[in-house]
Image 1: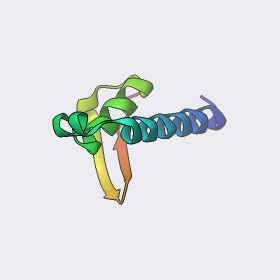
Image 2: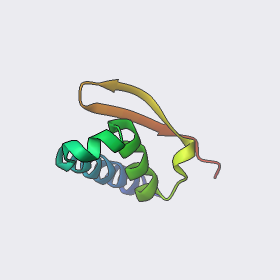
Image 3: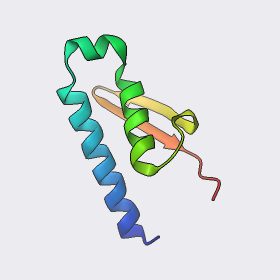
Image 4: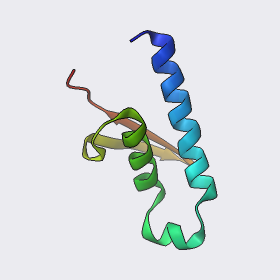
Length: 71
């Protein structure tokens, strides 16, 4: 894949993750935490298993994630 396509996917992923976090209600937050929501969102967008996604760190409302690609 070209770098621009990967960069665009990452931007879209982060944008969607922020929307999910900001629109979740208090009732939803009691079931899933911010890290779980981000992991699930990125896993779905990138076509990966959520189990391979790791939370690297959280700063304020920003969650930094990573995963290893076996390809």
